[in-house]
Image 1 (spheres, rainbow, N blue to C red):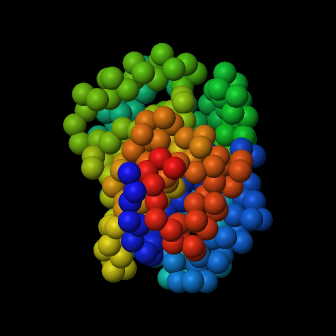
Image 2: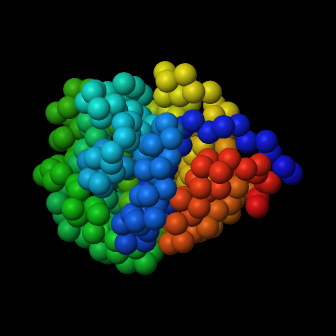
Length: 290
Protein backbone atom coordinates (compact mmCIF):
# COMPACT_ATOMS: atom_id res chain seq x y z
CA UNK A 1 0.00 0.00 0.00
CA UNK A 2 1.44 3.36 -1.04
CA UNK A 3 1.29 6.17 1.51
CA UNK A 4 1.49 9.79 0.44
CA UNK A 5 4.01 11.17 2.93
CA UNK A 6 3.42 14.76 3.96
CA UNK A 7 6.45 16.99 4.16
CA UNK A 8 8.15 16.01 7.42
CA UNK A 9 8.84 18.91 9.78
CA UNK A 10 9.78 17.01 12.96
CA UNK A 11 11.75 13.80 13.55
CA UNK A 12 11.86 11.92 16.87
CA UNK A 13 14.73 9.46 17.28
CA UNK A 14 15.02 6.61 19.75
CA UNK A 15 18.59 5.90 20.84
CA UNK A 16 19.42 2.33 21.83
CA UNK A 17 19.02 -0.05 18.91
CA UNK A 18 17.98 2.84 16.67
CA UNK A 19 20.20 5.88 16.25
CA UNK A 20 23.09 4.45 18.27
CA UNK A 21 25.10 1.50 17.08
CA UNK A 22 25.57 -1.52 19.34
CA UNK A 23 28.67 0.06 20.89
CA UNK A 24 26.50 3.09 21.81
CA UNK A 25 28.25 5.41 19.34
CA UNK A 26 26.87 7.59 16.56
CA UNK A 27 28.34 7.18 13.08
CA UNK A 28 29.79 10.08 11.11
CA UNK A 29 27.28 9.41 8.34
CA UNK A 30 24.34 9.67 10.75
CA UNK A 31 25.68 12.92 12.18
CA UNK A 32 26.04 14.39 8.71
CA UNK A 33 22.48 13.44 7.68
CA UNK A 34 20.98 14.79 10.92
CA UNK A 35 22.95 18.02 10.53
CA UNK A 36 21.63 18.42 6.98
CA UNK A 37 18.04 17.87 8.12
CA UNK A 38 18.48 20.52 10.82
CA UNK A 39 20.06 22.88 8.28
CA UNK A 40 16.91 22.53 6.18
CA UNK A 41 14.73 23.59 9.11
CA UNK A 42 13.60 20.16 10.32
CA UNK A 43 13.12 19.84 14.09
CA UNK A 44 15.19 16.79 15.07
CA UNK A 45 15.17 15.52 18.63
CA UNK A 46 16.04 12.53 20.75
CA UNK A 47 12.96 10.60 21.93
CA UNK A 48 14.22 8.12 24.49
CA UNK A 49 13.38 6.14 27.58
CA UNK A 50 16.70 7.24 29.02
CA UNK A 51 16.93 10.07 31.54
CA UNK A 52 18.42 13.27 30.18
CA UNK A 53 21.65 12.57 32.08
CA UNK A 54 21.96 9.30 30.14
CA UNK A 55 21.81 10.90 26.70
CA UNK A 56 25.29 11.04 25.09
CA UNK A 57 26.92 14.45 25.40
CA UNK A 58 27.40 14.78 21.66
CA UNK A 59 23.62 14.57 21.21
CA UNK A 60 22.79 16.86 24.11
CA UNK A 61 25.13 19.40 22.53
CA UNK A 62 24.42 18.60 18.87
CA UNK A 63 24.21 21.93 16.98
CA UNK A 64 20.60 22.85 16.31
CA UNK A 65 19.10 19.96 18.29
CA UNK A 66 17.10 22.14 20.65
CA UNK A 67 14.58 19.75 22.25
CA UNK A 68 14.90 16.47 24.13
CA UNK A 69 12.11 14.03 24.98
CA UNK A 70 13.17 11.71 27.81
CA UNK A 71 11.75 9.08 30.18
CA UNK A 72 9.37 7.83 27.45
CA UNK A 73 7.65 11.20 27.12
CA UNK A 74 7.44 12.15 30.78
CA UNK A 75 9.82 15.07 30.35
CA UNK A 76 10.44 17.41 27.41
CA UNK A 77 13.23 19.96 27.73
CA UNK A 78 14.15 23.02 25.69
CA UNK A 79 17.94 22.85 25.82
CA UNK A 80 18.42 26.25 24.27
CA UNK A 81 16.44 28.03 26.96
CA UNK A 82 17.39 25.43 29.59
CA UNK A 83 13.85 24.91 30.77
CA UNK A 84 11.33 22.10 31.11
CA UNK A 85 8.45 22.68 28.72
CA UNK A 86 6.39 19.59 29.59
CA UNK A 87 6.18 17.16 32.51
CA UNK A 88 3.83 14.19 32.92
CA UNK A 89 5.04 12.65 36.16
CA UNK A 90 4.22 9.52 38.16
CA UNK A 91 2.68 10.23 41.61
CA UNK A 92 4.77 9.14 44.57
CA UNK A 93 2.08 6.83 45.98
CA UNK A 94 1.72 5.05 42.66
CA UNK A 95 5.49 4.71 42.38
CA UNK A 96 5.50 3.12 45.84
CA UNK A 97 3.03 0.47 44.65
CA UNK A 98 5.21 -0.26 41.62
CA UNK A 99 8.33 -0.51 43.78
CA UNK A 100 6.57 -2.97 46.10
CA UNK A 101 5.87 -5.28 43.16
CA UNK A 102 9.42 -5.06 41.84
CA UNK A 103 10.74 -5.67 45.34
CA UNK A 104 9.36 -9.20 45.27
CA UNK A 105 12.15 -10.13 42.84
CA UNK A 106 15.94 -10.04 42.72
CA UNK A 107 15.58 -7.01 40.52
CA UNK A 108 17.56 -3.81 39.98
CA UNK A 109 15.04 -1.11 40.92
CA UNK A 110 15.61 2.41 39.69
CA UNK A 111 13.75 5.68 40.19
CA UNK A 112 14.18 8.80 38.10
CA UNK A 113 13.97 12.42 39.22
CA UNK A 114 14.85 15.52 37.21
CA UNK A 115 16.36 13.48 34.40
CA UNK A 116 18.63 11.44 36.70
CA UNK A 117 18.43 7.71 37.45
CA UNK A 118 19.00 6.52 41.03
CA UNK A 119 19.86 2.94 42.03
CA UNK A 120 21.44 1.04 44.91
CA UNK A 121 25.16 0.33 44.70
CA UNK A 122 24.74 -3.40 45.39
CA UNK A 123 22.69 -3.71 42.19
CA UNK A 124 24.74 -1.38 40.01
CA UNK A 125 27.79 -3.48 40.91
CA UNK A 126 25.90 -6.49 39.52
CA UNK A 127 25.01 -4.80 36.22
CA UNK A 128 27.13 -7.25 34.21
CA UNK A 129 25.26 -10.16 35.81
CA UNK A 130 21.86 -8.68 34.89
CA UNK A 131 22.80 -8.41 31.22
CA UNK A 132 25.06 -11.44 30.82
CA UNK A 133 22.27 -13.75 29.66
CA UNK A 134 21.04 -11.13 27.20
CA UNK A 135 24.37 -10.49 25.47
CA UNK A 136 24.22 -6.77 26.24
CA UNK A 137 27.49 -5.71 27.92
CA UNK A 138 27.27 -2.16 26.57
CA UNK A 139 24.01 -1.59 28.46
CA UNK A 140 25.64 -2.82 31.66
CA UNK A 141 28.50 -0.38 31.09
CA UNK A 142 26.03 2.45 30.43
CA UNK A 143 24.20 1.79 33.70
CA UNK A 144 27.42 1.70 35.74
CA UNK A 145 28.48 4.99 34.18
CA UNK A 146 25.24 6.95 34.54
CA UNK A 147 23.39 5.86 37.70
CA UNK A 148 23.55 7.96 40.85
CA UNK A 149 24.09 5.71 43.84
CA UNK A 150 21.82 5.69 46.91
CA UNK A 151 22.07 3.49 49.99
CA UNK A 152 18.36 2.64 49.94
CA UNK A 153 16.03 3.11 46.99
CA UNK A 154 13.01 2.98 49.31
CA UNK A 155 14.47 5.70 51.54
CA UNK A 156 15.18 7.88 48.51
CA UNK A 157 11.58 7.49 47.34
CA UNK A 158 10.23 8.43 50.78
CA UNK A 159 12.54 11.41 51.16
CA UNK A 160 11.42 12.93 47.87
CA UNK A 161 8.04 14.53 48.53
CA UNK A 162 7.13 14.76 44.85
CA UNK A 163 6.23 12.90 41.69
CA UNK A 164 8.92 11.26 39.57
CA UNK A 165 9.78 10.67 35.92
CA UNK A 166 9.48 6.89 35.95
CA UNK A 167 10.35 3.64 37.73
CA UNK A 168 12.43 0.91 36.12
CA UNK A 169 13.09 -2.71 36.97
CA UNK A 170 15.83 -4.81 35.37
CA UNK A 171 15.46 -8.57 35.76
CA UNK A 172 17.73 -11.59 35.69
CA UNK A 173 15.19 -13.72 33.83
CA UNK A 174 12.37 -13.22 31.33
CA UNK A 175 10.10 -15.40 33.47
CA UNK A 176 10.36 -13.07 36.47
CA UNK A 177 9.90 -10.03 34.26
CA UNK A 178 6.69 -11.49 32.84
CA UNK A 179 5.38 -12.35 36.31
CA UNK A 180 6.04 -8.82 37.55
CA UNK A 181 4.42 -7.34 34.43
CA UNK A 182 1.18 -9.20 35.14
CA UNK A 183 1.15 -7.97 38.72
CA UNK A 184 1.80 -4.40 37.62
CA UNK A 185 -1.17 -4.55 35.28
CA UNK A 186 -3.38 -4.53 38.39
CA UNK A 187 -2.17 -1.03 39.35
CA UNK A 188 -4.36 1.73 37.88
CA UNK A 189 -3.05 4.91 36.33
CA UNK A 190 0.25 3.65 34.91
CA UNK A 191 1.83 2.94 31.55
CA UNK A 192 3.95 -0.23 31.41
CA UNK A 193 6.54 -0.70 28.71
CA UNK A 194 10.14 -1.78 28.17
CA UNK A 195 12.92 -1.11 25.70
CA UNK A 196 15.00 -4.17 26.60
CA UNK A 197 14.32 -7.89 26.76
CA UNK A 198 14.70 -7.90 30.54
CA UNK A 199 13.38 -4.54 31.74
CA UNK A 200 10.10 -2.94 32.73
CA UNK A 201 9.58 0.82 32.63
CA UNK A 202 6.61 2.37 34.41
CA UNK A 203 5.34 5.90 33.89
CA UNK A 204 2.15 7.86 34.27
CA UNK A 205 -0.87 6.38 32.52
CA UNK A 206 -1.41 7.66 28.98
CA UNK A 207 2.15 8.98 28.68
CA UNK A 208 4.44 7.64 25.96
CA UNK A 209 6.87 8.86 23.34
CA UNK A 210 4.08 9.29 20.80
CA UNK A 211 1.92 11.53 22.96
CA UNK A 212 5.05 13.48 23.87
CA UNK A 213 6.03 14.11 20.26
CA UNK A 214 2.50 15.13 19.32
CA UNK A 215 2.31 17.43 22.37
CA UNK A 216 5.58 19.10 21.39
CA UNK A 217 4.39 19.34 17.80
CA UNK A 218 1.28 21.24 18.86
CA UNK A 219 3.43 23.69 20.81
CA UNK A 220 5.55 24.30 17.72
CA UNK A 221 2.76 24.32 15.15
CA UNK A 222 3.63 20.91 13.69
CA UNK A 223 0.78 18.50 12.92
CA UNK A 224 0.81 14.79 13.70
CA UNK A 225 1.03 14.02 9.96
CA UNK A 226 4.23 16.06 9.73
CA UNK A 227 6.03 14.05 12.43
CA UNK A 228 8.33 11.13 11.67
CA UNK A 229 9.66 8.79 14.36
CA UNK A 230 12.27 6.02 14.32
CA UNK A 231 12.41 3.18 16.85
CA UNK A 232 13.08 -0.48 17.48
CA UNK A 233 11.69 -1.58 20.86
CA UNK A 234 8.34 -2.01 22.54
CA UNK A 235 8.60 1.35 24.30
CA UNK A 236 8.52 2.80 20.77
CA UNK A 237 5.26 1.05 19.80
CA UNK A 238 2.92 3.93 20.61
CA UNK A 239 5.30 6.43 19.04
CA UNK A 240 5.46 4.49 15.76
CA UNK A 241 1.70 4.00 15.82
CA UNK A 242 0.71 7.58 16.65
CA UNK A 243 2.95 9.77 14.49
CA UNK A 244 2.33 10.51 10.83
CA UNK A 245 5.21 8.40 9.55
CA UNK A 246 6.61 5.57 11.65
CA UNK A 247 10.00 4.07 10.77
CA UNK A 248 11.14 0.80 12.36
CA UNK A 249 14.69 -0.47 12.29
CA UNK A 250 15.63 -3.66 10.47
CA UNK A 251 16.71 -4.99 13.88
CA UNK A 252 13.43 -3.89 15.49
CA UNK A 253 10.72 -6.00 17.08
CA UNK A 254 8.37 -7.80 14.73
CA UNK A 255 5.38 -6.23 16.48
CA UNK A 256 6.66 -2.82 15.42
CA UNK A 257 7.45 -3.87 11.87
CA UNK A 258 3.82 -4.92 11.50
CA UNK A 259 2.62 -1.34 12.06
CA UNK A 260 5.51 0.51 10.42
CA UNK A 261 5.11 2.82 7.45
CA UNK A 262 8.67 1.91 6.53
CA UNK A 263 11.14 -0.73 7.72
CA UNK A 264 14.63 0.66 7.26
CA UNK A 265 18.10 -0.83 7.59
CA UNK A 266 19.51 -1.89 10.96
CA UNK A 267 21.13 0.44 13.47
CA UNK A 268 24.52 -1.00 12.48
CA UNK A 269 23.76 -0.02 8.87
CA UNK A 270 22.76 3.59 9.66
CA UNK A 271 19.08 2.84 9.14
CA UNK A 272 17.98 6.16 10.64
CA UNK A 273 20.14 8.17 8.24
CA UNK A 274 18.93 6.05 5.34
CA UNK A 275 15.27 6.74 6.17
CA UNK A 276 15.85 10.47 6.67
CA UNK A 277 17.65 10.79 3.36
CA UNK A 278 14.95 8.85 1.52
CA UNK A 279 11.77 10.29 3.00
CA UNK A 280 12.79 13.69 4.35
CA UNK A 281 15.71 15.04 2.38
CA UNK A 282 14.53 13.49 -0.89
CA UNK A 283 10.81 13.35 0.10
CA UNK A 284 9.63 10.29 -1.80
CA UNK A 285 6.31 8.42 -1.55
CA UNK A 286 6.38 5.52 0.90
CA UNK A 287 5.16 2.00 0.27
CA UNK A 288 4.19 0.34 3.56
CA UNK A 289 6.72 -2.25 4.67
CA UNK A 290 9.16 -1.35 1.90
